[in-house]
Length: 196
Image (cartoon, rainbow, N blue to C red):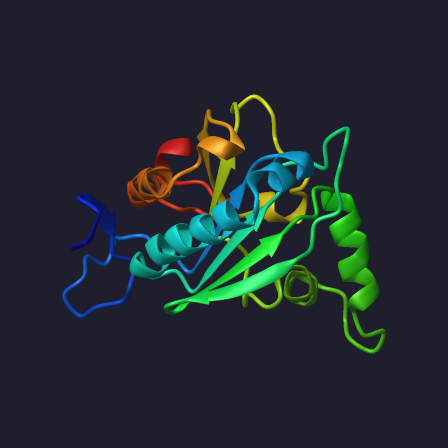
């Protein structure tokens, strides 16, 4: 089952009685790319258009959350605000923090000292308002380099690398990433029978 978007088929991840039980469940999508200077250069009108287009694609694919995150601060970093939008049923989070270690340290400081420190409480502090870790992480750039903005997220998220720059990102690229994700068998760090 697919939803049509601008002549491109998008895998529909919403649960349905007739849906194929092997299809991937896609709740939280993260797109990682660009430096903070590149984010600044995009400009407000282009940002609004990008968020609207990507949010609409994520919503149509059944994702409840879409997080856009900088790949890294860059050598000439510019302060960028964190902001959010609701596009249909998808909550879009624009997170400019390009340093995963900084984000992790800030999340740990937000934890209530009375609460246990475990995977669930750390994930809640890191991803809020999203209610869980990303299922799919789309990384803009070559597959030979992981983003320094990701630390915790790399544990279970499925990575799709796209060798393109931040300014080149379009809704069609997100559709392609969803198609790639739909073909995968997630093991969440485990092995399948063929790995034994």
